[in-house]
Image (cartoon, rainbow, N blue to C red):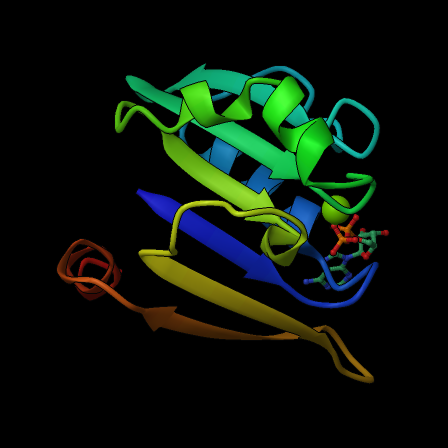
Amino acid sequence: MVIHLHGDLGAGKTSLVRGILHALGHAGRVKSPTYTLLESYHAGGLELRHFDLYRLRDEAEWEEAGFRDEFDGNSILFIEWPEKAHVPPADIEIDLAILQQGRRAMIKGNTATGKACLNQL
Ligand SMILES: Nc1ncnc2c1ncn2[C@@H]1O[C@H](COP(=O)(O)OP(=O)(O)O)[C@@H](O)[C@H]1O
Ligand SMILES: [Mg+2]
């Protein structure tokens, strides 16, 4: 399952992933992968990967980091700034926007897997 997170800096992408991880039972901290690019979690019996590619310099850095190995189909991937690298296509796309009060989330299922997941909400 691949989830792309769109929205400006500060739109709430990391906060949303944090909320999902805590809802799955993760008790520890969820820090932004701003500098590490990737943080990994095990929660709710699931393997989860949280990418933030904002600071990715180029495609070469992506290849050298070996991130492709994470796309083995065994994890749920949350990817902030997915347009920065050739990442796998999204099952679900979430677009966050800042409103005067709170945020607006537009959520789209692109694949049968993604749509089935959204139908469970
Ligand atoms: N739904 C929300 N309503 C109000 N404030 C929010 C919401 N989501 C995030 N924020 C606040 O916005 C700031 C930036 O959020 P963050 O999740 O780091 O954004 P992003 O990862 O998109 O850059 C944080 O201070 C956070 O508390
Ligand atoms: Mg973020």
